[in-house]
Length: 429
Ligand SMILES: *Cc1c(COP(=O)(O)O)cnc(C)c1O
Image 1 (cartoon, protein in one colour):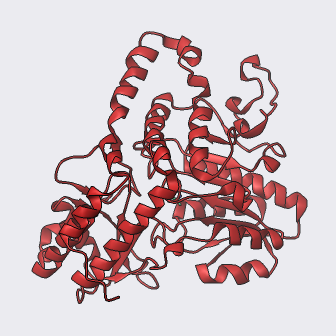
Image 2 (cartoon, rainbow, N blue to C red):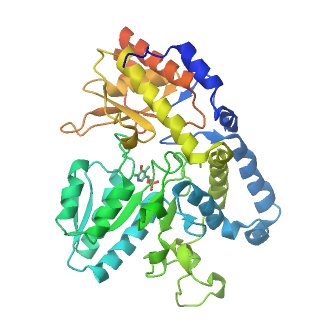
Image 3 (cartoon, protein in one colour):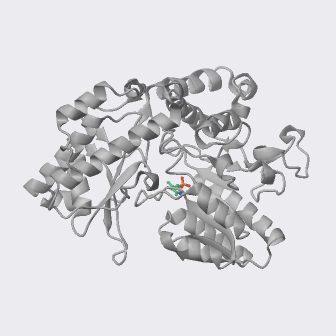
């Protein structure tokens, strides 16, 4: 507690000795921008434009339909999936990159409900967190209506007790909360769920490429995740889906399209599911977007010789820890409270600040100064408005953190955020 508050010079020195520093050169970031929104849309890798151009002009333009084989288009979802597997503790051949997070959640939650109906028909509840990302809750709500289940929503600290009541068929959680940046203990909650006869579905939207994940080690059942956040796949990038090999072949997933067929080019009138995770594909996948996602994954795998996700995690914790320390000391008295846990074991790769008034305008004033974070509205009752800052160790340094806090300090000290132009709301922020 008595260690002095880091100065800009301290931060610059940390950057000079940062073993991951060279990884930033993989990205094209506009000059003058400190990008703290990689948790929402990852930055653009330098390699992406040329790769997508090649896929368009050569693979599509010249080789045309032959590229399904010659350029390996048909196996791209599996090949990209294998790269994702290395980041989330899954095995080769266990992940496909396909469709969206929402759609993949529909597939795995349906499969989980089919299993639960067979193995534990008396359990009729899907348990989740009230502050889970809305699309996850909406998909679960729709499936509950369809299959006669109840969606029970609790606060994080109530999950344990709710599981122990023994009514839960499926525990569906997002590993790192999108609002608060709080991280669940995946292994402990999975073990507790299993002990209570419940299956687990984990959403890794804010975990894959952000924190080390060990799906196999945790013996989780199902997982989905997002391609355009920390995986740097570009806007609307395909998502991914993982199913533990002990479950994959037990059920058809409900969107049984021809890309999930064991022999799609036999064109038989009847469906025969492909073995393994391939059956979790539906129809033709977006090759141009998958090519871009492939480039995004390469930026993360480039960290493997430097220590991989463990090294990225160390730096991420150092960056978020530094940000919180600077906010506490340099922004004291400005009504900003830190929502994200101080405990490293409970924190993802973002920091959220709450403020009772002006959160939206403060974020806009920061964006005007080149510090890009985002705003998430509270519900006006239990949740405060949030200023969200994502920290991606691939392309952020310690001095970036220092400058970001300094800009925030100037916005608050000067009261500049009160200018009318910063309060104009846009549909998407
Ligand atoms: C970002 C995010 C999604 C996004 O779902 P899409 O289908 O890509 O729109 C879903 N779930 C969580 C938890 C997220 O953070």
